[in-house]
Each structure stands twice: as structure tokens, then as C-alpha cells.
Image (cartoon, rainbow, N blue to C red):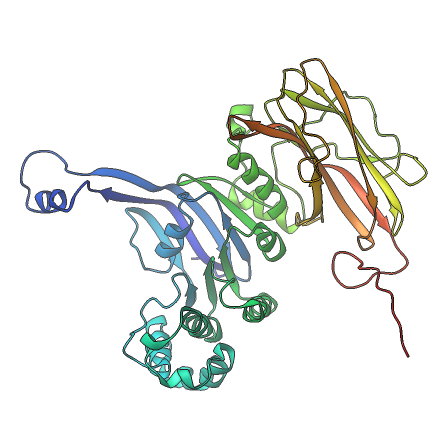
Length: 440
């Protein structure tokens, strides 16, 4: 194993045997009757992944894509059907919080039991005990049997054990949102400490904002197959295509997937490795002073198409630079190629890491709930004050709707325009609350 590799997964396969009833399992074990008494479910299909020391790598995908399965194989909870897993470093896993706790033991005993199962000595646990108790903050309940704990107290103690014992590799599966809001804030702060310390982190979550904020790279799984790997923004955008059933594999476009080494090299340089790209509307420069993305991501059924888009300042001038505190408008023209019962027009503003900051649509605003005929065109304008902090942002546009209760994407343009906010006063966070301050 190379010195800087923390985890390497090679051609990983996991097949589950599914039985219709318990007797079928017994029949197969005793070789009663001919043939198989089960069906096979391939949870992982030849997945390859390399994670280097100090990286924070996210794994995203729909339910049933194999995310939790691959984490359980990495941590040794499950055995693979085929393939290899190499791990270089001591692992602490936040998978099923509390797994391995003895409900008859008190909190202190369970701390030592769980810590020992993770692979730490009594001396190491002794040194971390005060930190664990302070982090869990369940008071004298720590001396009571775990079976008397509320669900909140139980996960607080389990999380405290896993996160405060000093691992080299941290595995997290949807476990950063336990307890009340104050405990969640404590969890995220600890997670940031781990990143600053250069720990290796593998992070599975449906919270795409957290994936975008914390991860250096993201792996996208779907139905046991690795669809791609790259920068968080790129993979999150592709994942959204998967969610609406409009993902087109790069091979189908005559393009090849980048391998792991190429993706890591691109990520290190801050380059978006996406091979999905497109350009909306005509090739002419429609937006004047607006900064258009030459490699924007677009997809959709094209029953409606966004053919023009631009931003204007409070004077009506086309521009991509907006003065903080001033009014600005987002414009788009949408042409219908088929009749649409109730199109929804939307915009979203994201930061450069892909975190959605704000946005709205005509359905939320109750601004347009009518049908539109084929051949018609609509001019949509969103006007609002610019209260974002100074910096660069990305604008995405979309036309969606519902067909017989099924959500449908007609046309989406991700990161189509750059928006630069010019400010002489930046406060904390993403936007300014424009506080009126009084000091007496």
C-alpha cells in the first residue's frame, strides 16, 4: 500500500441473498430440493475508490445506492462478496449509533465497552473519559443503565464516544444531526476540528449543503454503481439529474469517464472534472455585460426551453455586478414546444462551492399558476434587493412542473451566470440582516 493512501476499495461487490420466507433459507442450508431458494440483490457492483490521508470524501446517492453498505464493508461490519478493501489507520465509525452498547450496563461501562470494540486500550479511554462525558453532557444519567436513557441521551453518549476517541480515519453515515440544535452545533464543530487536524474523513449524507461545505471530493453511487467522482458542486449537480431520472452517462455522449488519479489531480487544482456540459439558447451573446458560463450544465425534456437570460441592476442595465443593498432583477424568456398545464419558473443562487444560498419560484410566490400552449413564450422577471455578502455567486435557472403528480424537469441550466456582489460592508454569514443599531 502506498504511504499516503488511507482507504483503497478495488472491484468491490456485495450480493445479498433474499428469501421469500424463513423456510426457504432452511431448505437451502440443508440442500433440500433442487435449485436456489433465493433471489440475489447486488448492492455493490465493481466499485473502485481511493481515499488519501487527510482527505474528506463524501459519498452521495439515492436510497439503496450502496452508500451504507460500502461504509460497513470498510469498517469490517460486513464482508464483501468479491473485491478488496485496504485500510491504513485506526477507524472510528459513526454508523448505527449505539451499536454494541449493552443496555444493562451504565454509561461509564458502555464507554469502555464501545471504546474497546473500536480498538482502543483502557489507558487511552481513561485519558479521553472526561472529554467524552463533557461532550455527551447527560449528567448523572451516565451512572444509570443505558436502558433507562431517552433516545436523545443514548445517541449523545454514543456520538461522544465515537467522535472523542482519537481515530486516524472517521467514518460518518448520516450522524451529524442527532440531539437538539445545540448538540448538533457541537457535533459540526468537532467535525471541523477533525478536518483542521488533517484526519481522513469519509462522509455519507443526504444533506447536500454539508457535503458541499466539508468535502474535498465526492463519489456518486446509484444502484450499486459508481457513476462518477469529482468536485462537490459537479457531483451534486449530477446527483440532482439522477433524482429526476434525467442523468445521461458520459459514455453515451461519446466521452469517457475520468479515472481516480485524473479526478484527484483536477480537484487539487480546483478544476471541475464534469464532462456534462451544454449551452442554452443560441450561440450569440445574449446577455451583454453578464458573465455567462461557457460550460454550463443543462438538461430536461425540452418541452419548455429557456432561450434568454440576463441580470439587470436597479437602473435596468444588463450586468453581472450588483451593488449590495440595491435592487436587481433576474430575467428569463421561456418558449413552449408543447402545452404545459402549469409550468414553474425558478432561480437559485449558490456560492462557488455549490451550497444553495437562496432562491424561489413562481409556485412558492403564487405568481403564475396557469397553463401555457405550445408555441407561446413567457418573459419572467424576479426582482429583489441584494442582501448577500460581497463576493462571487452562481445563478441557476429552471422550468419544471407536474405531470399526473410526477415532478418533471423541462429545462434546467445550472450555474449559467456569475453574479458578483460589490460591498463596502460585510457582516457574518451569507447575507446581511440590515440591522438597525441603537446604543444608549
